[in-house]
Length: 241
Image 1 (cartoon, rainbow, N blue to C red):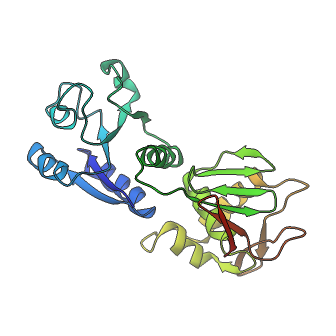
Image 2: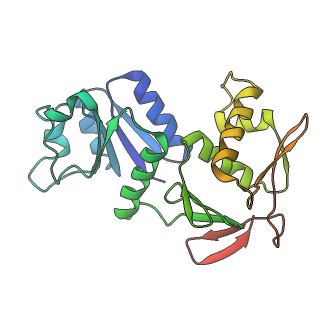
């Protein structure tokens, strides 16, 4: 996958961004000073994520990232606190920006869009399950052609269930696979997210997730299809998973 340069002063925010990037297969270069920046840029990262709240437009780091007009050493996403937007004059050298705090799903979608535009990623896969479509390239979910607005965690939970269609998945396994080994939450976390997912995805014509009492949940095959979802790879080849 891609190499991501993180120019983030806040250690907690930097760790959170790194976790988001590594969860989708990218590697990260974390930078805390100009000397580290010079060494990291020599490795030719594919994308730089810059905290505009810490590195203002007159910061020295921009002389490294943008050494001359129209010249940049990596694609750039800028994170800007809402109360500091007025301090920035966004120009064509900045590829994209998000108001911070940001939504994870939107953030990952914009990262992937820039990387694909720069030719750093292959087209992603699409899972189709009846009227449900999960587009991994755009982190987008649709039901019967209508876009469904999900949080990052809801998206990850849905995708895991959909790729294990017909299988009963325990709450404990969902916590491990979606939230991670070090997450301290309990079963109620899963139940709350499943309830929210159902409220967004399901109606009288669509039921995707079944509860298996005292065990967990199962993604339900839709009428007229097998238990396995259809996976389209690079928009050209179809197979079951």
